[in-house]
Image (cartoon, protein in one colour):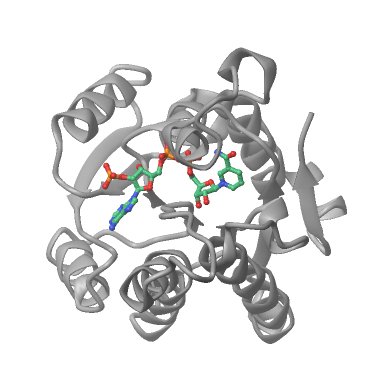
Length: 229
Ligand SMILES: NC(=O)c1ccc[n+]([C@@H]2O[C@H](COP(=O)([O-])OP(=O)(O)OC[C@H]3O[C@@H](n4cnc5c(N)ncnc54)[C@H](OP(=O)(O)O)[C@@H]3O)[C@@H](O)[C@H]2O)c1
């Protein structure tokens, strides 16, 4: 299951994991309802006839979304082996301008929803082997004007470190990736004047996610991995 799969890094990850060599028989693509999500699901479904695509519409800014997600998965008898917590939200603002409601939404989408989805998968006894959490270099070094986003991504890194230790005895690999500047809509929100052709592309991050799920990823998984050009 890939969250935030309607565009950007999530969509490229779905495309990459649908390829026959990735070995997945089913990919759940989660985002809010949109034409973009439907088109993305159709495209990914066309890549490999042996890999079924399931569209899962959910708004992760709603704390009740995780229950809805597991309701859908249970009703379709879908058992998760791999979860890519990639959905992300930001509304950059200085400390003087930042609204508590935006901070709460940022934390819900970026931190609490991965927490709820991981907890839900464990409680529903999904046969997880890989959890991939997408943090950010903004979570390693805070940036002026990005208070809420940087704080949320630092929390994703810390949560991943704890989960890596807690879930190791159960044979679940917890992988935390921190991309740097990547040409997506979210990046445009953070840096509107930047030329997207000069920075990392989302398919490059998707290739690293695919590598981390492969046997070679075993050699790299023990750290918060920075991915940047
Ligand atoms: N781009 C960068 O430079 C960069 C750098 C470091 C880390 N990251 C991280 O990479 C991840 C992917 O972002 P991206 O850069 O690929 O951005 P993007 O192209 O804007 O994609 C963001 C994804 O998150 C989903 N999303 C946002 N709010 C949601 C909500 N309330 N419920 C469900 N899904 C929601 C969006 O789906 P809908 O809007 O269709 O629902 C979309 O699929 C994020 O966690 C981001 O923080 C990005």
